Amino acid sequence: MLNQRSDKLELLRIAEAVANEKSIDKEVIIDSMEQAIQKAAKTRFGSENDIRAKINRENGDISLHKVLTIVEAPENFDTEISLNDAIKKEKKEDFKVGDEIFQQLPPVDFGRIAAQTARQVITQSVRAAERERQYNDFIEKKGEILSGIVKRLEYGNVIVDLNRSEAIIRKDELIPREILKTGDRIKAYCSDVIRENKGQQIFLSRANPKFMEKLFFQEVPEIYDGIIEIKSSARDPGSRAKICVYSKDSSIDPVGACVGMRGSRVQSVVNELHGEKIDIVNWSEDPATLVVSALAPAEIQKVIIDDQNKRIEVILTEENLSKAIGRRGQNVRLASKLMDFEIDILTESEESEKRQAEFKDKTEIFVKNLEVDETLGQLLVAEGFSSVEDIKQSTLEDIVKIEGIDENTAKELKERSEEHLKKEKENIAKKLKELGVEDKLINLNGITHGMLVTLGEKKIKTLKDFAELSTDELIGGYDEIKGKRFKIDGYLEEFALARNEAEELIMNARNIIFK
Image (cartoon, rainbow, N blue to C red; front, top):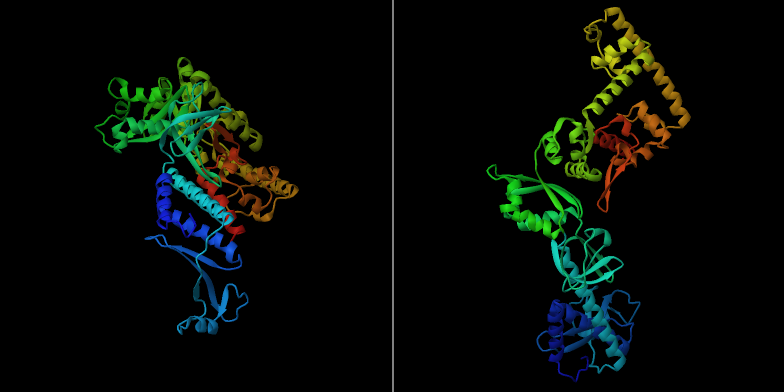
C-alpha cells in the first residue's frame, strides 16, 4: 500500500472501502494513512526530523516534506532555521519568524518493517475512530429503549448484541425470575453510556422505572404527542408498578387513554414486563387527593400533610390497613416513591394514641419547666402552646384570654418562662464550651443553641465542618441504590428544619468560609 511503485489510486480505494465498512468518515482514514507514512518516513530519514506526508485526494500522489520552523536563533537544526538562511535557501524575501518552510523529500520505497509500522498506526487510528463514532451514536440514545439480541450470559449478567456494538444488562437490572437465552430478542432502557479506552460501555436496564415509562411512550399516542404527561413512576420489578399521569386536555381521561380499548395498551406494557401489575394513577396538585389515588383500593378516612418535611400521615380503618400497606409493604412503598413523600399509615385507634402521647409529652414540658400543675399544663397545650418559648413570645393579653387564667397567673407564667430560658441558655453556653464548639459557628445566623449542642455531640464543632455538610446530611433524606430506597439520618433531623431553611444555613456558612 505504501510502495510508491504500486497503483497510486489504490490508497484512495482502500480508504473508501474501510470508511464504508466501518461507517467512518473517509477523511479520517486518509489522515491516519498520512500519519502512518510520516512515522514510516522517520525511520528512513531520522526520527529527529519533522516530516509531513500529504496524500492527494484526487490522484493518490504522496508527497513528503521536511518542515523547518523559522526562529531568531536556531538550537535544533533538524527542525529550526534562521530567517537569513531561510531567505537564502528558498530565495523568498517575505518570510518572518514563526513561518514554516517545506523541503521536499525524494520518493521512498518503504521497507517491510516500515510498512508494518504504518499498518499498525492505521489500524489503531481506525479503531479509535470507530470507538468515537460508536460512542457518539449511542450517547444520543441514552434514555431511550434499545433492541438487541442476547449474545451470551456472564455470571448472571446479559451481554446484548446491538448490531454494531455490545451492551450489558447487569444481574440487578434484570426483571427477577426472567429467563433469557442466547438468541432471544430483547428490549431494554439505555441507562448510561461511558467512554473508556477500550471503547464505550453501554449499560441497559429492564428494572428501571424509566423503562416502563418509555414503553407507555411507545404504546400511547397521546403521551408521544405530549397531550398526556407522565409525572412520576415507581416499580417493584417483576411484581408491581405505579405510574402517575396527567392530561393537559381536560376532555381526555389520562388513565383511560393509558389503559386503552379493553386494556390493550397497558396489556402490551405488562407483557413486555413479564406480567408486572401496573396501577395507573391520575395525578393531582393536591397531595391529599393524590395519596388517596396512589393507595387505592384502600379507603382513607383522613390525611395529614407536613409539606416541610415531606411526610404524610394517612388515617384509615382497621379493615383498610392491609389494603393500604399491601403485601410486604409494597403498596405504600410504591406510593411513597411515586409522590416523593414519606407515608405513615395509621389506624384510627393508633392516631388517637399518638395524639394522646403528644399531648402528654407537651403537658410534661410545662409541668417540669414552669413548675405548674398538670391541669394548667393541659390547658396550655389545649390552647395551642407547645413549648416554653411559645409562652415567652406570647403577650399577656393572649394568655389572659384563656379561660381559667387571670392576669397574675399570666404574669407568673411569663416570668417563669423567661427565667427558665435564661437558665437554659447559660447551661447550653457551658455545654458548648465543654464540647469545644467554635464561636464562629455559635454566631451563625439562624442556628439555635439546641442545634449547636446536637452538632457538637456529632463532632461538628467548627464553621468549616458545618459548611462542608450537604442538605441531606443536615436534615435527612432518602437515597436510591439499585432501585432500593434508603433512609439518610440527618444531624438536625429532630429540629424539623425545612429544606430551604437548611440550605440557607449551609450557604450562610459557606459565604463566610469561602468568601
